Image 1 (cartoon, rainbow, N blue to C red):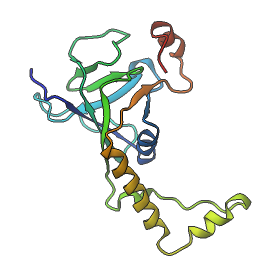
Image 2: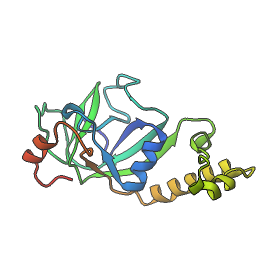
Image 3: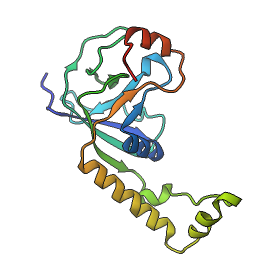
Image 4: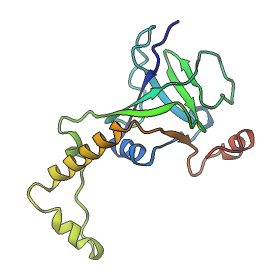
Amino acid sequence: MNLPSPLILQHETHPSSALNILRTRRFIAGPILGDAGLNAFIVGHPRGNYRGEQAERRGAILEFEWSGPVSTQDYGVYPDLDVCYDQHPHRAFVFVGTTQHLRLVGLKVKSGNGWADYVHRPELTVSTIWPWLQSRRKNWVMEQAEMIAKEVEQTLAQKPAVRIVLPNSSPYHHLVRKRYPNIE
């Protein structure tokens, strides 16, 4: 089977999570070993579409360019690092610890109002009085949304490399670190 090269992988998540990935260049793996990595779909897969609506969080589509090896082999419990596993029609999967071949090239918000639907005014407290007052200006939400959109556009123009990292706490930390001692 011939897959395009480089691959475009799509991953759906909440817009705030998507912004965090864009800003930190880190994709935090799932909380269980079977999902310890990036779950995605390969755009234009020759065998057709994937099973739809699998995303736990929704609202933004991240697009990654994958330039590394692709495998359709079963990997058991511990996949190789820096390999994209094509498990069509379920998913494409890149395991935690991957530091190569993955670049962020797109971020699309599914809302009709773009980032404006995800801008929240700060709560009023003693320490936030000035930001709270600023947020009461007439066009504040749209200005913030435009700033986010510009940041996204400028960052994506660089096609930043993204690493897949362990979550802060998970039941599989010790297992993964034992097998792959140098992962983040």
